[in-house]
Every structure is written in C-alpha cells, then in structure tokens.
Length: 88
Image (tube, rainbow, N blue to C red; front, side, top):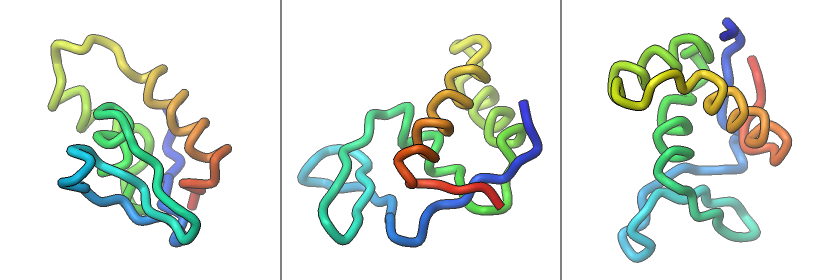
C-alpha cells in the first residue's frame, strides 16, 4: 500500500440519493451511480487519510473480505483516471 493521500475533486460531490437507493457522485453535467464498494472507499477519501489508512479502515469494517488492498488501489486508479479524485 502507499502513503499517498487521495482527495475528492471539488467538482464532484458524494451523497446518498434516496431516489436511487445508493451513493452517487454529483457533478455539473450529471450524476454517477456508485456500487457499494466504490461508495465505501470514496466515503473515506477526505484529503487527510492515506491509501494505507483507507485500507486499514475498510479491513476493520469488512474483516470477512480478506485482502482487499489490490481492489482498493485498482478502484482509486480508475477514480483518478475519471478525475473523481487526485492525490495531495
């Protein structure tokens, strides 16, 4: 894992949408519906927690999931490519 710190792009806002029954990313041109795993990860992207810390928090919350470090890093890479996040 890494000590880099992801932060949300200020153009995107994470929120729970009752109508959708899930978390979404809102942005000026629309909305991205997130699956549960993506929402769990993005809820921890606060600009102060490192990728390592995010992994530890999720591992504690979901101990039955096994080693999820690769999944977290893979998702964060996709989120960065989509410009949802950047690194401090």
